[in-house]
Length: 89
Image 1 (cartoon, rainbow, N blue to C red):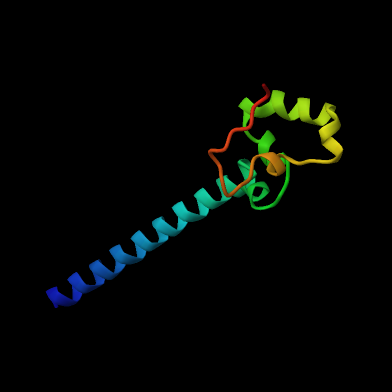
Image 2 (cartoon, rainbow, N blue to C red):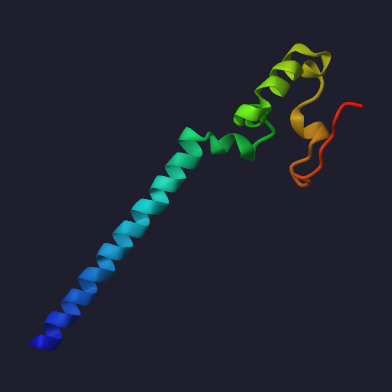
């Protein structure tokens, strides 16, 4: 009888752990893709550049410039080379 109770307790603890881990994963996913607009990083969208408050001035400058109609952020800052920093002379 004691072994059966221990088995139920372990199964219950496993279920609770799985529910908690699932909740954490869903919470992080929701935060990433809703609050932080994570989906914009998966496409070639200048909106991803504006997600960071540090980049607001650069984004507004790009929108007001002649580059707005012909180039996006990823044209000069490729996603496959995230450390590449193109700056004005």
